Length: 112
Image 1 (spheres, rainbow, N blue to C red):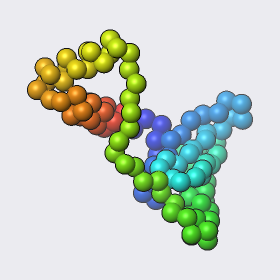
Image 2 (cartoon, helix red, strand yellow):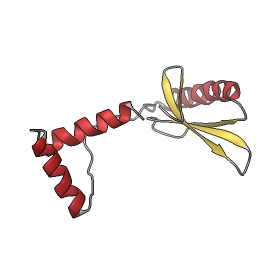
Image 3 (cartoon, rainbow, N blue to C red):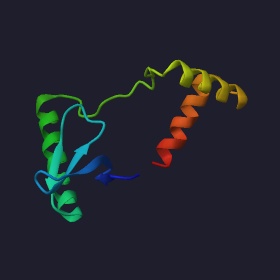
């Protein structure tokens, strides 16, 4: 995936912050924030490990579940035209709209 790194089995999105001239990483799927900054990939990996460790220790200390649970459900708002196009595409693929959306999102996420 573009702009995503994995640290100790956990994914973080990375972006360059031009105001400070550094890369910023932020872990995904946590019940709180655990971000980190560095000017190199090596530095990001090191700072990411530290940030994750501090976050997990704090969660353990406060008896908070560190990871967000995903339900597998979410609402999508589309324009009426996009909604119609999706229904047609699903029908053309012999799928329900839900099946088509789930498959389309899964394929897009795997290639991102």
